[in-house]
Image 1 (cartoon, rainbow, N blue to C red):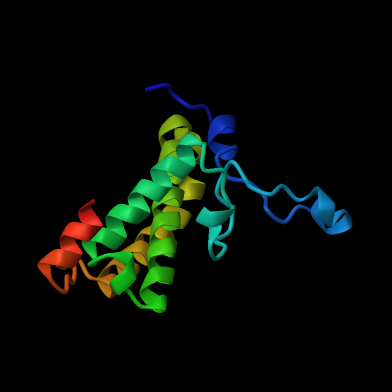
Image 2 (image 1 turned 120 degrees about the horizontal axis):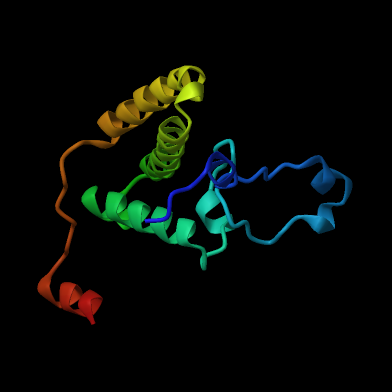
Length: 147
């Protein structure tokens, strides 16, 4: 795997609220290549689906919702928490990469890392740490879904 430097890691986030977008709203991209620096609701739907980062985030989101019994069976609140969980997981990975590639900055980043860890643990406990079986009404419906 290609080693990233700090500049590459910083570029893994995008400022979705640049002042230039406020001055010229028509200049706002339709899709973004990187997740937002701050959490934003429905951020996955605003990302370019062709990027590797999006593919990783989408796979993680799909696996998480599947573990919880499928997105169709989750409440709005749990779906929002799933999205936040995935975003925080990405943030933690980026912070860990920064600390590993530049140990001198680790002291400054460790408090952010601890906060993100505590948050993701809390969300994980709220969502549930065990896999849940998906609700299937009958065999015919199951076969239709599989086709």
